[in-house]
Figure 1 (cartoon, rainbow, N blue to C red):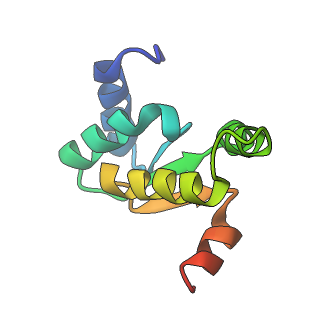
Figure 2: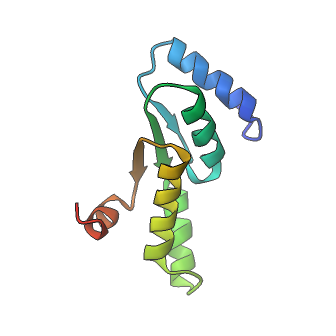
Length: 103
């Protein structure tokens, strides 16, 4: 799939749903938040955002370099996935986020 072509992504999602997909997973989630939003607006099924390992490492590396506050950036990104329309968020930050949110 052409990563720059959102219309193609919507066609692929529609085909997946027609073939019986129960959940649509968008991966990598951070680079495709627009696709999460479009999928949420167009399809009536659970949308999963997969925050891949490269995105996790990017934040950790930037934090180690003193470029950002890891906890704040993590929460902003996870909240962004939710705002974009994700029903499910898969992330390497799951344990830390759950602890911060008291769950």
